[in-house]
Length: 268
Length: 265
Image (cartoon, rainbow over all chains, first blue to last red; front, side, top):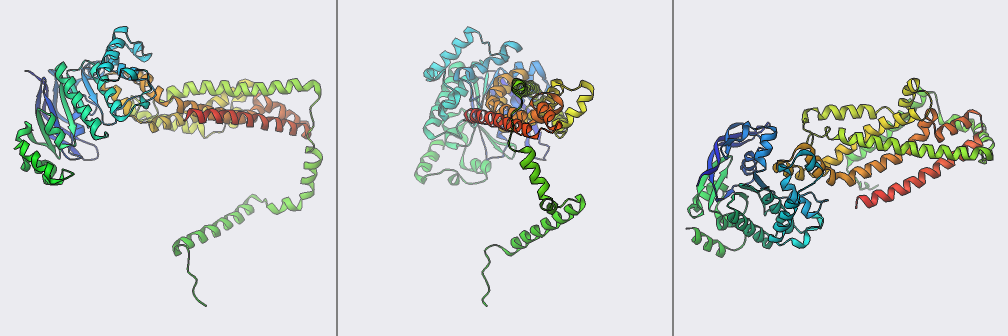
């Protein structure tokens, strides 16, 4: 399996003096499901957005599919972005448009300027969008306004839009942070199912440690812009968790200690 | 005597007292500077009342043969306001895209665009009309251009604010799929801001109908008709035209108000 993504000593300073990423290096291979965990402000969002250059980096190199992302501009940047799907905490849909229109936005990167402006999608794309909605259990909502959907449904539309791009890599920025527990589970299950089926590598920023432990094949722990852990979930022990979050595991888990103990047993 | 319990904090009370004294002082100074005193109105009350009761009241209708012409000028005013607002809105939409740091492909120039719009807006339409009328001559052309300039400038500001209020999240997501700037505008910004844009457009239309009667004094329409009656001292006919204008503005206000409420639902 070849690496799709490679961070080479990447760093990012914001103009306000925040040092969001410090010499971050790692690789992601095909089919991996990587969770990035860390407290707020540890650089998770910056890391994710450095990959498709929504945030330009200040040092080092991000390699995507053998291309240096930071060197790209204009057309070639857009061609790179269309191969990377992205899912957001706030779904980031255009709420006044229909669900199907939102899904088809995933094709804009492949379309000529004028066709894209007027939303003249090919019949093939439209059929693809409907099939995808069916697969995600949203077939009946294709012509609803996106604003009429519930949170979990909106995020499923977000997934459909990203998958429409035919991506090699899926970036998920806190995909379940605004969802209730049951919708969150649906979304995580769908993410795992869709990416496995299509052999898409997936990087997910997560606040929920238990979710990261359950779903990922690999966990990256960020603290103050530095990678302090990179390995399979089994190796993430209490001492490392404390190094990532700066507080003990007990303080991270809401609810009883009983669950906590079984969890610890699971990953030990 | 027992001490009374204060209801508000002492420093706040002092602040209010200070403001009151300052306002009175300012009024005295201003009256002195402008050499106008409200008292003169009361002293000259007779002349003023005479004007109101003799010249102004009761409202009189213009000659029957003139009525179609007056109504015509009302239609001209409405048409003037609508066409100038529409043209201005279309121009303002394209310019406003460059006036928001979050949307514009050249964020550094956003301030320049907004500054330019603010500058244009701070010159009232009537002043534009007087400036333009030396080059365009009296007529609806002047009114059109004057209203266009001010409502363009106003709508650039309003559209920029609308775009910044509406979440930029969907623009980010379209950027992430590799959409071009025009595609992001048409597929994300326009659909999510359209109701806001239309609402501002209707508000501007409402303002322009009022303004077009004033600007009309050099720029045609009912304003010119009103002005010609005032100049010929037919204040009673002028009053009925003022009432007509008021009726027109109220009707338009009601309609646009209803439409805006529907839009912003």
